[in-house]
Image 1 (cartoon, helix red, strand yellow):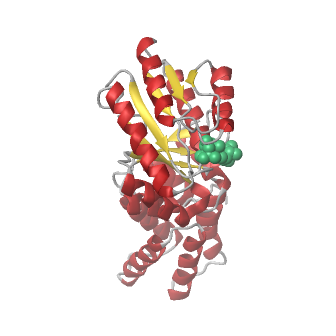
Image 2: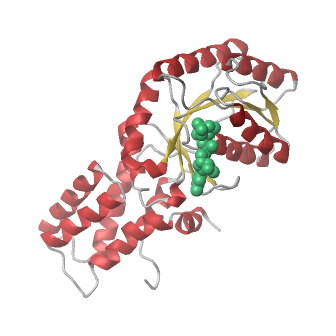
Length: 308
Ligand SMILES: Nc1nc2c(ncn2[C@@H]2O[C@H](COP(=O)(O)OP(=O)(O)OP(=O)(O)O)[C@@H](O)[C@H]2O)c(=O)[nH]1
Ligand SMILES: [Mg+2]
């Protein structure tokens, strides 16, 4: 099954909101007028396109005035073009892996999907024949390391952790790098806490972890990926900005896009943060992480359901 089919199958709620919503608007042979465009705008807000919704409908109104928008098919085509334009430069996928070990630091607010996404990344990279070692840098809760360890044991990935609450995450980062070098691992992925007593503490801790990684391994972290909870839609953008302001984030992972109609937030997220979307999470199990591809994503949520 290709990526478009997998997206279509997993992003059902966002697809229902946008694609099926569009079919609904045109039911009964309605023609395009301002009322229809207003309803379309509302529908786009529902799927969390935010400021993009107004922009998109203005563009459609402009095309309609020029006589270039005759019916449903034209609307879908114009939406597709505009949405693709909004995702320009957002495409992600795997990094170059041009260092060994290649070090990836994963950050994000608590509950956003960091640890799950790390398990998925490790699964993906191992499937490509790379050896992976995980660093349980979320030392705020011992349970976080347990979660990662269970997964690592099940999948034969190495893990470095400490066995007490509030251990020093910088020490875990140090030990993980040392183990990666000694065992000649290809990829290091370091988990982090999503919450500390204050946001300032958290950002200071992340900087310290980054400093340790860079001291042990030249150029590390080679990537710092911010995990965003896709179900939080527009709200996630504000939280994400706190991270990107404090830490040099190089890419995004938008998790939980399967469970939400708010997948349209990806457009605002990319625009507001100006970062590539490397991957999206489309479910809880290890293989449900997709390299983000704007064309397939837009088609999956905008194209007409065959026979629908
Ligand atoms: N449906 C779905 N659930 C997901 C996805 N990614 C993560 N989750 C779920 O979201 C919840 C939180 O995920 P975690 O990976 O523990 O999040 P975290 O950022 O590590 O959380 P903290 O360690 O508490 O900061 C878990 O119940 C995951 O199963 C996804 O792509 N789809
Ligand atoms: Mg976690």
